[in-house]
Image (cartoon, rainbow, N blue to C red; front, side, top):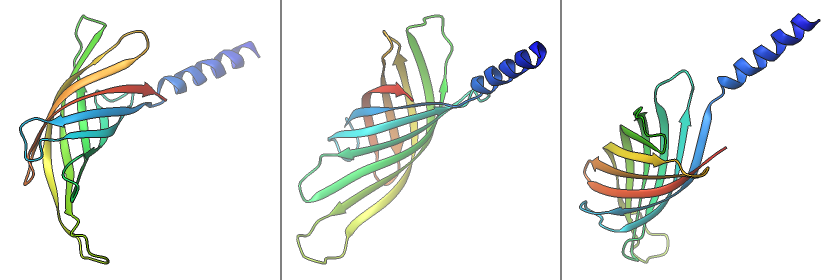
Length: 160
């Protein structure tokens, strides 16, 4: 009976070690040198699986542009964390693709959408700062496509 209890506990602990780690949180961005050059508010999600050396990253950013324009971007990225001796800093690089949507409101009822949807390649570099249970992060992202963006982003991640 004792052997069965030990086997059961080790199986539960092993299965728990294989569960994915999910982090989500808000983010603020500013496009410094791209085509939009405006402030954005958004959402960041990160999924890590213990057996893989990468994190999967999904993002959404809504940019505050001219009142007749709407612009947002959805990102799908893969982040590769670096191992460094400093436990308070976790740098990463990554890449992926983004889907950008720019639309114009022409003020007419039942009007057709005057906008464009663009896909672009994302190149990302950043770091997570580990301090007292919080996980703030800062990163730079270059998006290359028909709508180019160079954004600086800061945010806060919470583990689920």
